[in-house]
Amino acid sequence: MANVTRYNPFDDFLNDFGKGFFVRPFNLPAEAELKMRIDVSEDDKAYTVKADIPGVRKEDIQVDIDGDTVSLRAEVKQEKEEKDGGKVVYRERSYGLVSRSFSLPAEVDDKTSQAEYKDGVLKLVLPKKANGGGRRLNVA
Image 1 (cartoon, helix red, strand yellow):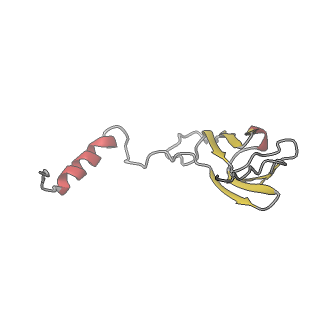
Image 2 (tube, helix red, strand yellow):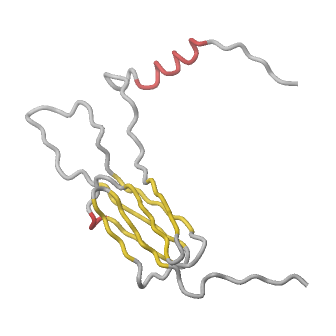
Image 3 (spheres, helix red, strand yellow):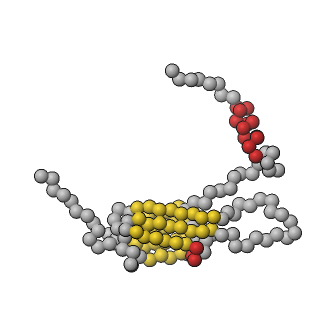
């Protein structure tokens, strides 16, 4: 038998009220999680991957290819902080490490793969490996 409880809106209010109100002078939103969004497209010869990685330098991006697995890693660094005799009251800029790994349907030729980073978007052109199409078995 299911348990039925009565909803009390003050429970949510009191739980949210006590979480950060007494720790910080303002109840500001938590720090945003760093995310890497990708698009993968395919044609007969290659895969094209576009990854949004804003706020990084191309020297801080690492791309690893192992067969059909692609791993992307980027380190977001806060380069410069300016204070004019005061203190930082609120910061939305973040820093840290973001990574993403995914598998493709076919193996990639890592020798001829290309990577370009421009305007916060990493573009990878990953040619398919020759003879990597697999084969169909006849059922007897």
